[in-house]
Every structure is written in C-alpha cells, then in structure tokens.
Image (cartoon, rainbow, N blue to C red):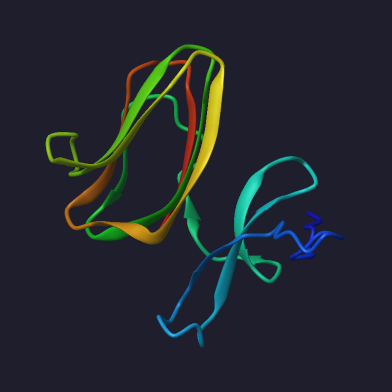
Length: 137
C-alpha cells in the first residue's frame, strides 16, 4: 500500500493528524491516521501498522477480553444507527462511548487520550447493516 506521508498541504494545514505519542512528554513514537491507496483507513508508525484492528463488524461483538484501549472507530450505515463501546465482555457493563448517526451516515472518531477499558471492549450496535471498525490495543 502507498500512504501519503506529507503532514501539511501547500497552505500549512495539517493533513495527517497525529493520533497519539507513546510518551506523555512527546518524546516517544508518534502514530498517525492515514488512508491507503485503496481507501482503507489505518493507523501507522512510519509505514508499519502498530494497532490492532477489529476488522469490519456489523453486529454486537466482543472486540477484546481484558484491559485495553480504543484509539479510533470508523462507522457507516445505510440505516440510522446507535452504537456504544461498552466496558464488558457481554454488553452488560458501562458504556464508555456512544454515538447516533443518521441513515446513510458515516464518521471516524479519534480518541486522544484513548478510551480505557478494564474488563473488555464490547461493540453494541442497533442494526445489522452497519460497517464498524475499531482500532484498539
């Protein structure tokens, strides 16, 4: 895959937003959200992907058992959609984040700092037509 490695356009506008750094003081490794030449979203350090991706999900799904972090989520649906990320392994825990999108809606949310989960990362969706991808570790 080919990535656009430019960080600014010709007007000095940021076009490759920084997701996070591995150290609070900024001295660690920087990670970026990018779109590859096929239109797929990815999180990269240089040219190497470093976070785990859930793959495309369209139903309630356990993403991770145990403690973890969510760094980004990408969502689209032809129907109106309510979505939550729940701190549990079965959807019965505490919602850490949620959003409603209209029919034919889409969005990508980047969490800085990342959302923290202690029990698990559970994706709860209201339709079976959605396409959701979660970037986590």
